[in-house]
Image (cartoon, rainbow, N blue to C red):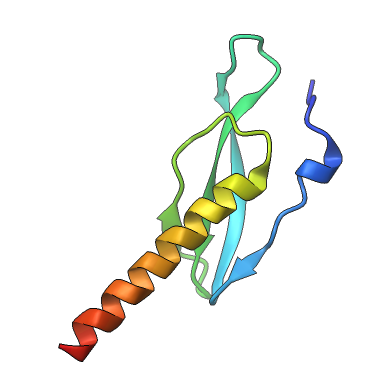
Amino acid sequence: NNIIPPDLLKTESSYKGYTFEVIEDTSQTSVSGKVNKRYAVAKNNQGIEIFRSKSSFATNKQILINELKFKIDNELSTNSVQESI
């Protein structure tokens, strides 16, 4: 049933100490029934989920990973500003 080309499924697996996982939500399918919603999570080195992207019908998993990278960078820059005050 999956119509997503294999080359779009390749994604980065980690960033700044976080490991990414893209999760497919089979309970939320597109109108055509061919694409499921998915979301990405970023886990710390203990395997605890720290960040989660919004659910999306995006067929390129890297879009979800990029959203998490933005959240990670934003969190790190916010924390460094607070620490320097």
